Length: 239
Image (cartoon, rainbow, N blue to C red):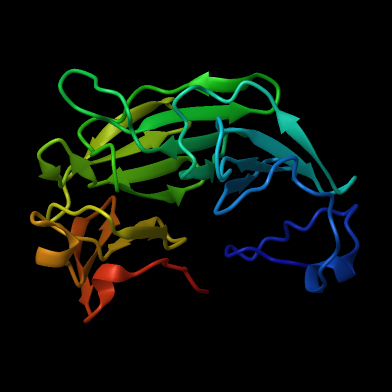
């Protein structure tokens, strides 16, 4: 059967084994989408959020049993067309989107969660991090790290982690360098890698061809440097 990074079988028994290696047609989405955010929920449905070319943000769920998509109502006001979604160990999906509002003199990211039974639920603002061009990745099934980003004065180094079990944000040590516009990924071993982006001065004047890795035991430390890393588009953890 199909196996995840931990080696444990996750392929649902009702889905034919051959589907692991083949493509199958699905129903069409209810609206045209580009670069939508998506996350697999605990019941194997897929939450598809935003990505429309115009209009208010919307979402739908894909059911692989029926191969159809159903609209999800009441997407929160302020959710941007460019968002990132993370499945959580408590069965919910955490959605982060660029901040467009001011709170106590800063512009934090907008964060909400989706519950299959309860719908959209509010999540407190993450402390410290910038509301634009921040980096986010899953540390593990229960924790999502958000770091850096642009504040009103430029890139910041602050970092924080959302705990699904605690339902709250907890501060982390800051990045080694203020950084915005980079990319991040969880490494599957309780670590998060952040790479690229830029510092004060913007992407043209201050590109960052470097990377940092976070672990709970050691905090942030330098991971690598490579020409052109500042413009990295995506990080993929292997093995």
